[in-house]
Length: 22
Image 1: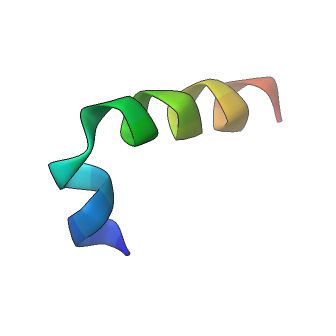
Image 2: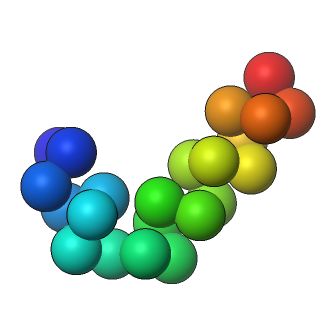
């Protein structure tokens, strides 16, 4: 899934926000 995250900057950004909140 890491590859998809890199391919999809939007998902990566969203995950970053979620991780930051966590």
